[in-house]
Structure formats: structure tokens, C-alpha cells
Amino acid sequence: MALYLIRKLQNFAIFSDEERSALQDLASRRQRLLNGRDDVIAQGERPGFVNLVLEGFACRYKILPDGRRQILSFFIPGDLCDLHSDVLHVMDHSIGAISPLRIAQIAPDEIDAVTTQLPRLRRAFWWNELVGEATTREWLTNIGQRTGTERVAHLLCETFVRMRAIGLVDGTGACPFPITQADLSDALGISIVHTNRMLQDLRAEGLIVLKGRTLQVDDLGALMRLANFDPSYLHLRSNVGEETGGQPELDRETTS
Amino acid sequence: MALYLIRKLQNFAIFSDEERSALQDLASRRQRLLNGRDDVIAQGERPGFVNLVLEGFACRYKILPDGRRQILSFFIPGDLCDLHSDVLHVMDHSIGAISPLRIAQIAPDEIDAVTTQLPRLRRAFWWNELVGEATTREWLTNIGQRTGTERVAHLLCETFVRMRAIGLVDGTGACPFPITQADLSDALGISIVHTNRMLQDLRAEGLIVLKGRTLQVDDLGALMRLANFDPSYLHLRSNVGEETGGQPELDRETTS
DNA sequence: CGCGGTCTTGAGTGTTGTCAATGCTGGTGG
DNA sequence: CCACCAGCATTGACAACACTCAAGACCGCG
Image 1 (tube, each protein chain N blue to C red):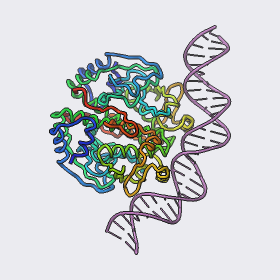
Image 2 (cartoon, helix red, strand yellow; image 1 turned 120 degrees about the vertical axis):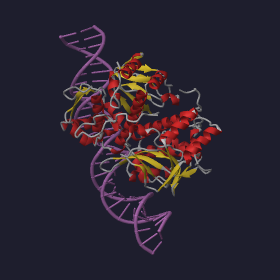
Image 3 (cartoon, each protein chain N blue to C red; image 1 turned 30 degrees about the horizontal axis):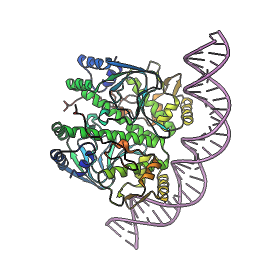
């Protein structure tokens, strides 16, 4: 089931049946199940496959010699982990499961074959890569410049909007959120205790409800304002929230 | 003069005369000169060219609505700025000159043509891109996990090692360093005053001499240890420092 | 010589971290 | 169905690292 991947990539272009089923194909080869804290692949190993998250949450992280951990990104269903890392031969970071996880392992060759045949998919994958990089830059800005509250709020905004973009937010404005406070703090560069207090604040403001691995956002507009969150770096088709802004990123040119 | 670019890419593969002169060609088309604080391209504009730094320092940065600035990376001679950002149509960050700057503007088509004809160059550009991403991840880790002193030391290590890799460190262990303390603090997520104090500490330890836009590293080993600096993310051929470690990243496979 | 930008320093404040204890919850086995 | 346990969340008290404000020194350039 490449459903989430398709939904995500459709923020870039609308696909034909052929393209859709090619994506289905990719996602249906090898599948793999992991438990909560397992590693998909560890720092130092050499990447063999491109990993596609089908179900559950994962993260990219780095461990320092003294044990400190920095989470570099979260992966939600539909996310592709390491499209091109095989060029570097060795992983300089790890990919780990946050929750029980189902992934598809895709051989780089398979990707090559499909994208050669269907150039619009190639461009969609590119778009996807670049959004990933833009997100990392936004994280850098988040950690570097924003205060504790802002950081937490910003990350919640981002995750919520991404979940919404793949249809995982329900009618009440709630979505699965298996990320623990320890994970959050390693992602945001603040202590667990402080993360907890910032979350309390957000709850007290009536902005969110976070419990039982579920995040409910009650006032996205206010949360976005508090976080200084501008969703344009996600390059989604509908960058909604308050005002409707971003024009769609439809693939115009006829490529290279 | 694509000298620095060639030196840098030769960390990935050794080039033939043909490849070398193709790189020369790329760098010799349009050139552009900028002053100290000028923007090469600003947030919101649409990228037209790939920018290659020929001389001077530049940086990638983001400005928040309230004026806070996060520097996302530094560009030194030989660095390519935005190899693929044209897919996204709009810059989500700016590129600015740190010092007087000379750059070459390369059209995406020219890159395409050259890399199609010379696949080893294509792979070298890939390698370059991926090293850039790895560096951003390392910065995220740096800001997220390390203390003030470590952060400053880490950034100095990185810059010094990169400068050395392109032959810009002289026999006394000194290299040009036009980055101001204000720039450093925006890159590291700490205040100017604090940056200044951390630098004092490093000087007091006898690790560095930093003055007159010149950085001299007196004890790289100690600086690396202090910073927890592991150069492997730079994927240089000789990851020297103390012990000699990393095996060369010679291009083995025959590509896609 | 004067000026702007950069660097340096001191003093006081406060955000954030650490330590440590307690509460909560879901899952497991008896 | 209950007791127990592990992992996670929460709280309080205190310490410390880093920030702000503000003044002054330095340096290169015109």
C-alpha cells in the first residue's frame, strides 16, 4: 500500500493510473516489520535499500560518543528515507523506529528503472528530496533561533500539517502521535523536563491536547502564530492554516 | 579558475584532463563580483543559476519575520550553492556574501550537458551534494546537543579542515577567516557576547589565534577533542587530524 | 583624524538544565 | 481480575549556563 506516498507526492503533481500503480509496485516488494526502538539501519552500516515508511513513525538520528542523541527528522507514513545515500557508501547517522513500524525496502535499481520510464515520478521524487532538505534547514532555524515554547509549538505544527497532508488527521483535528517527550527533547535540543513544561503551557493555553499517543490541535492558527510557523517550506499544495497562500507546485516545465 | 572546485571534488575521484577542463569551462562563463554584505540571491526569488564560489566566503541563511537570522551553512571557495533548487521554484532561504565575493553563475543546462557527457563528474557532483547535506545534519547536531564552547570549537574545526582540503591553509596552520563574531553567533545559535567569551576561552587554552580575519589553529588535535569533532561526515580523502582513519571514497561502482 | 563596524568586558537577569522523587498507564503473568 | 512492572509523564527545588543591556576599546579605512 503506497497510499500515503501517493498522497504525499500528489502535492507535487497529479499522477496517471500508470504512475500510481508503479508506485504501488515499488512499495509491495520486500516489506519489513520492526518494533518500537529498533534500528532500521545504523550509523556506520552501508545502505542497501531505500526505505519507505508504510505504517508508524521513524526518525533519523545521530549519537555522539558520549551518548547524547540528536534526532534529525521524523518520518511519517509515506516518507522515503534514503533515496541517494548509497553514493556515500556509509551511513553517517541511523534510522530508528519510533513506534511499531512497517516499511518497504526498495532497491535503488528499481527506483532508477521506474523513474527512467516515468519522468514525472522522477521529478516527484526530486521534489520530495528537496522538501526534506528544506525541512532540515527549518529545523536548524528552529533550534538555533527559537525559544523553548516556540520550538515545541513549531514541531507540533509541522508534524500536524504533514499528517494532515497525507490524510491522517481525523474530523476532530486529532492524529496519531507516538513521539515521546524524550524523543521531542532530543529533536529540539532541550531537556525532557523543559519539554514537558512547554507542553503544559501549550495545553494551558488551550492550543493542544496531547495524550495517549494522540495529538489534537484545537487552535492551529494560534499555534502557528505562537511558533512563527510558515508552512511554505513544506511546499504543500494547500498551505492552509489561516489565510490561503501558496500557489500549487504543479510540475510545469518539461524537465531535463 | 575552477581550481578550488577541482581540488574539492578530487576528494571523491581523480579526474582526467578532459574532466578537469570541463570544470574549468563551467567556471569561466558568467562571473559576478559582490561586496561584503550583498545577497547573491534572496529568499522568495526564483533561482536561475547554480552559483559557484570562486573567491571569498558566503553563507546560506534564513530570516525570521522578527529579524532573527539563522546561518545554515558557510560557503568557501570551490563550493556550489544550489545545484538542484530549481525544482522548488522559489528560494526558501537566501545566499549572502560574507566577504567580497567572486562567483561563477552556471546555467542548470550547462551542468546537465557536462554531467551527461562525463558521468564521473555527475557522480562527483552528487557526492558534493550529499556531503553538503551531511554537513547540515552535523550542524543540527552541533546546535542541538553541544555546549557553547564545543559549538564554537566544532565550527572552527570544520571550517579549518575544509579550508585545508582545498589548499587554503598555509604552512603555519593559518587560513583566511572573514567570518565575524556576529556571523558565528547566528550560525551557532548563541549570542554575540557568548561567542566572544567562548573564543576567549579557546585562545586562553592556546588552541587558536583568531584575529585580523585570519584563523590559526595551533593544536588541531586538542581542538577536535574538545569539540567532539569527527571529520568523517565531510567524506574527505584524508580525514587526518590525529590518527589517520577514513578510507578514500574513490568511485567504485559504475553508476546508474 | 574621525568614523563605522567589530570586538571586548562587566554586571545583573532569567531561561533552561540537573537532580530526584512521585504519579500514571498499559501490558504481563499469575 | 488483580498485582506488578517498566516506561513515560510530571513536579519541585536549586544551580548554571547563556542572554541582555550598556559602555568602552580597538581597528581599518577614507
